[in-house]
Image (cartoon, rainbow, N blue to C red; front, side, top):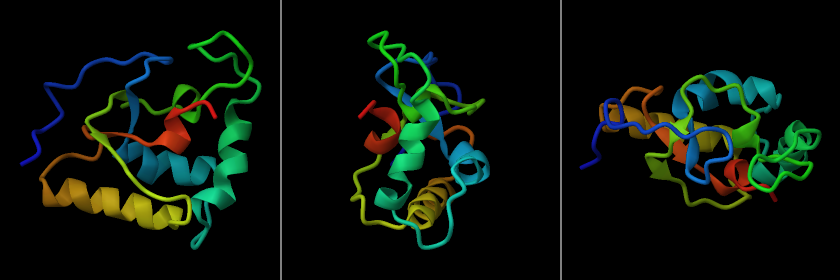
Amino acid sequence: SPRPAGPMAKPAPRGDPFRGLSIAWLREGFLADLAVQDGERVYDIEPRIRARGEAVVCPRDGRPGAAYVDVAEDPWAARATIMLSYTWGYAVTDIVSALSRYCGDSSQAFDQVRVWVCCLCVNQ
């Protein structure tokens, strides 16, 4: 059974390879930040994901272009507590809904669960 993330959450500054975004941010900020529309798939929004970090110096390698996790204004971002395996063909809103449901099913707060998702956490 999953353990609550709250007191065990570890800090993960921008550039930390294990930094994850909170489910609260995915629900409340991410969808609006990238203007995600119902039915859009990961491959549809990928150019917008890249555009958000293209003018930012990557904290990992010092070169232009940062991963979304390093530019997102998620106040609850920290060390990831879960990792998501998915395909770029999934609808983005379905992914966020499934992660929200996971929090509810495991009695964890949206702001205490942080997810590592390659399209958001890897500077591709």
